[in-house]
Length: 516
Image (cartoon, rainbow, N blue to C red; front, side):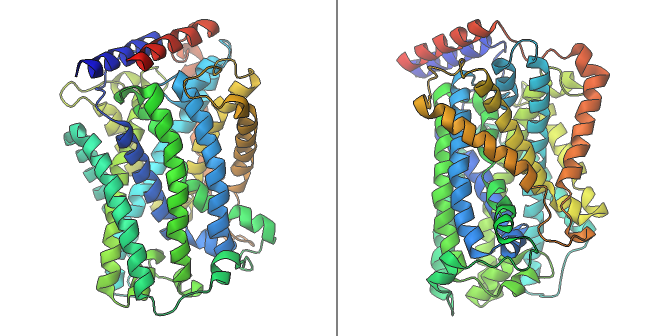
């Protein structure tokens, strides 16, 4: 007990030297952070199988699903390792926003942190919106298991989405002290769900695809793109699934020994997700029903129909769908938790309109309550875009992927340009492979920004347009306008010492932690 307290004091002392007062209780473990990513990552995986499954089925089918997943998993592991190295030196809730500031020169620190912070914030908000909206859609899709021609209208979908958001917000408020337990339960629920779903599908399927179809079948004829480009466009599903590893950095100030546990959780989570994804996707492809049947489902959510078709009954399909809904419940809570911490961290440095309010921590609940309210409200308002254009709303997966990927790439790029001098000797070090891994990840992120603005198929019509670039530009305009209105005059970025002192001051407490 005493040792634990010493660790907490050391972590808080390290945070104080980075310019922040410890306001949040350090009651989360590495397993809890791993569970947080599992919930977010696996739910976006299920979102990919439902809301964005048409992308991989259009742009290559089996080869894009399996080998695209393997490729993106390896690249994501490199990005996660690069971020983990930086996180081990600067473990704060500000995450990539703070890292960009600390790795930049004093002159460019404010603008680097401003751009990265807004990208991270928008990425967190759109991921949370996408996860919980998908949860609402999947709940409604259960009705279609018994009524094949039924599809919810816009109002029914929005109201269900708001209900899901409200439940997640209430759990974050009144169940804050149980978040560690909730995240750990998520790991067991997810593992059990994967096993149950796979055993059920493989044992009950009347027909099975061949191994040749699962591992070598490639058909991008419906996309209109050349085969090679279609494969890359189809990587959005995998890339969207594996973007959450950077979000867990927002929980650094609630973890004991964050300079060790959070980087470890970031890398392990991506490795586990990559392996689990292959284990899950291969059996799904072996029992995959007719592709045209899945693409033509009335409610736009093919995963329920897949379960129903394979099990041969609506009840069996619902039983498997219920397991996924449980995962989405955990993910909605986790994503909103990360978004609220990101909002809190960015607001305490004055980067958001009304920052004084959004950065307040409730002494009653020990959470950034107003930051949680803002994140919930923004997500609920973003859902209204669904009334104007379902295509624009569905582009949120691309927006989230672009925003988060770019925000991850900026601190890595800045570190490279400055010779990686502030991460040399980091507690979690990439060693001699650091430069090569950093360069590879930056090149991929540059390509991903272009890829995920592409329409799934051509020629393009309004319902099938990818509006990710438009939505991304809208958020960029808002952040740019606020910067010129107030930010350039008052925003100085996070508290920062001289470049050399930053590294020294932040590694000395970490050495003490290691000794404890």
